[in-house]
Image 1 (cartoon, rainbow, N blue to C red):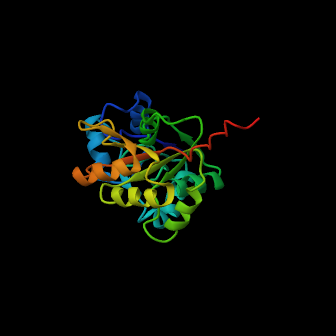
Image 2: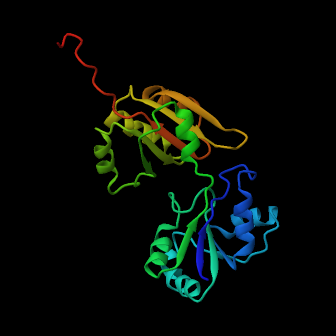
Length: 232
């Protein structure tokens, strides 16, 4: 019976993978990998001999039809990204949508996702939050910021070390320099750390300390206005 498994992989520490994920990767007939070299290293570490095929943002449209054809013929496949859960700021959405259109079963295994630990350790409310992922580099970026000006929920971004300062400077412009922020980098890795403070303090921090590693930036939502104590 044809089936696509969405399999989360470690975001840093190789031990952060479930027994079920390993067994699934061993049992399927093909693993669709964002980067076959990265996934190859993981497979070698856990003695997984399943064939790998490239499936990433630059070729997913091109190989989508053939992949659906293979799945429809009865194959079982697993989709993995370089790190974390496929479909969360990684390839996966198009394939899942096409599978559902073609009545191909899709099952997503639970596992690592970078924003969850960063959100939890931020100290900001976790009952309601908005995940923005990577902001557009140019087109549409300003509109995304404008839409967040009145956002009261906790806001989560992904960012590279090369653009984290740009993100903070824009946050200062649109949300204010006193907005509190929690910035986690290298989650689960040896040099994991989290900076907490205001946007203004974060800008100064990363001027003094060059940003390195992958970042999850968590910002508090717009604070509620305090009620006038003189109201009756």
